[in-house]
Length: 325
Image (cartoon, rainbow, N blue to C red; front, side):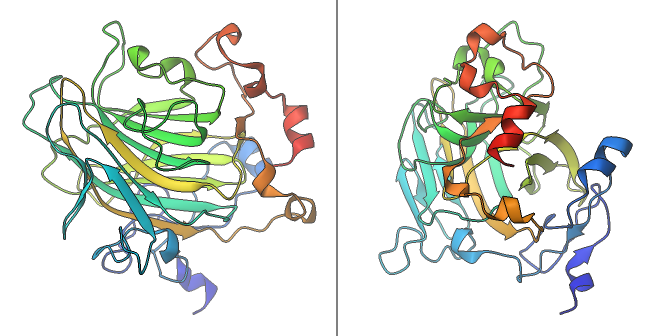
């Protein structure tokens, strides 16, 4: 197939249908950093989801071959997670439940994009439901804990799809999606809905929708982008777009959810990982990407004062450049 056949030039807005069962955005050529700095955010090419880029060893696709299987152990699950023919339910709509599902294979792609088809629904009325889903790319897997059913002080990346405002003074509108990068030294503060360690976030009305809901996470050359398709319009909406993020290879993808006094059904229908075809410099190729420490080069101060954040997470541009991409 010709290379130009892999891309659907619809920009950030329109979600390319692609083949049946492969919705969502995907790999596109990397925009030069200089152009980005001069022109600001630019339109990016989005793939039509062709299987040439789909990494099946890191993807959860119906009929869920390999989930919990000894013959094809691609995914493992624990806690309250149950497997059906149509979805993986991380928690039922019951109190005090925790569940997770984790890819068995570490991912060694430098540039990737994950598409998640999910559903959060339940009988609870407004603000009487919780708690939400977390999507992970982390060093450790299958470790239960207090952060949406998984461990605190993790190493790697987390995307939180939070449905309940624990902080009564918050100005956020929930449900709310936020991103956190951790080198093991930060703790997620549930009482403040992770506000002090949040890199960026957006309001996203994904609960109790009567149509499919999707989320896409793209990581390429230090740029992290999160997009949503929640309106049944076959269109992507930008949620988070930040630069200066450094993530190693060799970590694991997973999803978890938890309920407390309030509850919801938290379902994963599919998780599809695509390889982004990106050129790297010889210096970048010579780096041992498995040894990179998860960190962020803040272009502006995060929401927490410096005294509340470990110094290891406060990397200057000079330090980041010296350490690699």
